[in-house]
Length: 266
Ligand SMILES: NC(=O)c1ccc[n+]([C@@H]2O[C@H](COP(=O)([O-])OP(=O)(O)OC[C@H]3O[C@@H](n4cnc5c(N)ncnc54)[C@H](OP(=O)(O)O)[C@@H]3O)[C@@H](O)[C@H]2O)c1
Image (cartoon, rainbow, N blue to C red; front, top):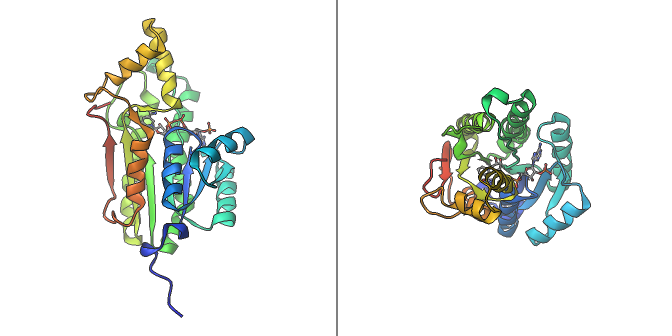
């Protein structure tokens, strides 16, 4: 009887991928790309159990993906999500940490809650998920972990202290994960986009429109004009990098923060 092919040459349909925050925006685009590539995909988000969210996401990914509720800030929720993914799809060997939030607040009136939420979801959430998948990846001798960080992880901006700190931490976590994973065939990268057109960015349109007394369309143009390309990056552009990273064409791609920045520092 022929032995199984080495894991690094297995067909995508033999691999299970998890996308946190995969119900909207960048996470959803990553889930679409991974489903299209043929992986078994599990999507987790706090509202992923809602019937309306499930219907929308299933229709967007085009073919069955598993959706289950997940709060990356809660260890019990992570454990129960992981158990249901393993039961349904087997041990995951791809993890995309896209779950994230942001609150704008100047330092002098930054609440503890806003600080803690951003650190807990954007940084500690990715750590909890990584810790949960790592043993299975070591067992398989192959793994891919993509952490959606931000240009905010390497550039400071007024009103974003917790967000910048969480994303700088996520880039550090990615590098440590890459070094620890390398002997086991596990690669880890941070992907740091500038502004991307997603529901998260809608908040920024509203804030700019209110602050400057302009329409949302004009606010959108302000953000588009804030990078040298003069356009707003789309979620599919981030997903294309995640997709490539997970293929067997990129075994040495690890321990790096890849910016998708349209020429901007922020
Ligand atoms: N859009 C941008 O301009 C931009 C730029 C750079 C980096 N990023 C980063 O890219 C990632 C995705 O952002 P996006 O723009 O796609 O945002 P989005 O459209 O608001 O999506 C965020 C996703 O995260 C989920 N989520 C939030 N808190 C969660 C939690 N505690 N546990 C599990 N899931 C949670 C949300 O679902 P639920 O609410 O149902 O949980 C949703 O699926 C974030 O990490 C963000 O910081 C975004």
